[in-house]
Image (cartoon, rainbow, N blue to C red; front, side):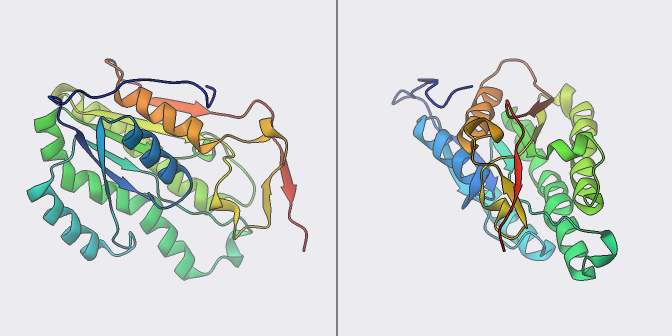
Length: 230
């Protein structure tokens, strides 16, 4: 899917914009999703701003939002990773990654499903290609993303008769700030990693499809990883 692809699906004055709850809207994939959906004229993005590792704050924020702006879609794009031998990862990092990558989307779905049923809405989780395979030094990150993918698949079966659609997207290397704190990054060649806009356009296509795309893995044409220079 090229960046030049145009969906050209503009809203009319009579059409009411659909409300999308979005985590991770300030950077990377989440920011691209926000830009693409809002520029289409069909959606209003409501950023989820609470710290995702704080369940009480997150629940309070969502409960307040639903009363005034019930969602048509819930998209979880927030997440982070750390890749090293498991015994070298700090216990606090383990807890935080599980909270942000897995617990938060589970809690958000729990809070939003009733509203999504009314609107025949959609849940989209941005997981990772690591949810589809096993890689060295990725035990923690892969566990959270594999859990998210399994949650998405089971939730789809649970909700399909209600009209709520559930999708899990598993992107490979993508050029975002995800790698800022890591010791490796995508190679500079254009085909070595995905562009966030490609993922965002995929999200819009999934939202506007009449059928259900329950699981999709996106990969760059050529995979390229390079170590950062110290």
